[in-house]
Length: 122
Image 1 (cartoon, rainbow, N blue to C red):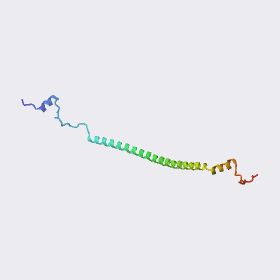
Image 2 (image 1 turned 30 degrees about the vertical axis):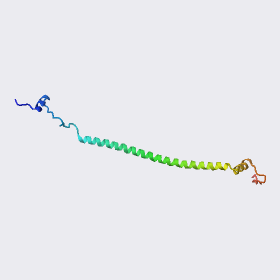
Image 3 (image 1 turned 135 degrees about the vertical axis):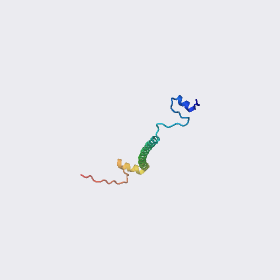
Image 4 (image 1 turned 90 degrees about the horizontal axis):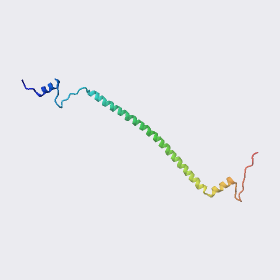
């Protein structure tokens, strides 16, 4: 009988099927095109998600910019009103204001002052 090689002995132990040596595996059932298509699909989905999120953030940013401009206008208006109130407060502390209010509300006049009133229309 001739010498039996290692491969033949392995074949006989495995039931006649061929067993490959280490490191030389054959790809079975895998299609490289499917993998590439899957990767492209994932990239497309991610790009779509990023685009949608970017558009939403841009819209929100524009809304916030409008709100900011409105608030700045409101701040300027309130500062103007505060300045008017400060001026009014300063005027109310003068003698002229006291005289004007005494004449208007109480009808008071100085002793040497002549009051001319319109005639009653009847």
